[in-house]
Length: 268
Image (cartoon, rainbow, N blue to C red; front, side, top):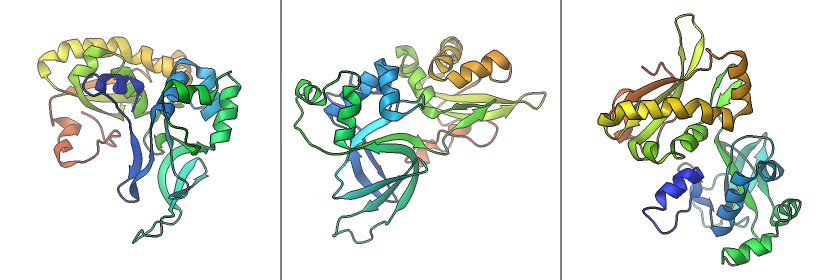
């Protein structure tokens, strides 16, 4: 969930927090709280802080805390591996790889890294009026296979979501989206962005707004995309496709529990 999406949802709810889990593992592995949200918002405003906490990846990961007595979490090749430790679990998973990219920090690790930027984690807890829990932190970038790569630049669903929810008109008119690769007449792959509109009457204005924001947003979020556009402007120029509800790549959305963000065939 991008912070833009959180701000959008806060128009309709008093508090908005995400939980982390998997249907084939367990739903409640980790959760957001006022402290993790505050830290994440600070990282959104400070790229140097984001790098100190989460590394060089341009994406802003979800940040959770979890109970290590219930879930033993390892990071292997940047992938999250979980063992359920609760003795009453009938069918526990042992070192189960969810295929999500991420990392973890102990409470003390987080405290020390924040201190490098003159941020006191205990003061943050007081500001957000949250009880002190010395629990480890888990950060999650998303599915490892949820990316489209063109000319060396990776484009993630989180990038598109961030762009859409940075604009109130787009967030109010776009119901869903997916990304894929499409070959042009010369056989060159180009990034294709498909959007499901809540009302096709707004198609013209939505398309105009997307053309204004997509390239600028991707360049802002990804140094690799910006560099690729400088070298191969035509190859990374976005292809935009707009559909009505349950049309095109979204035709089976009503039968899905989770949205599909990567479309593996041509997105026409």
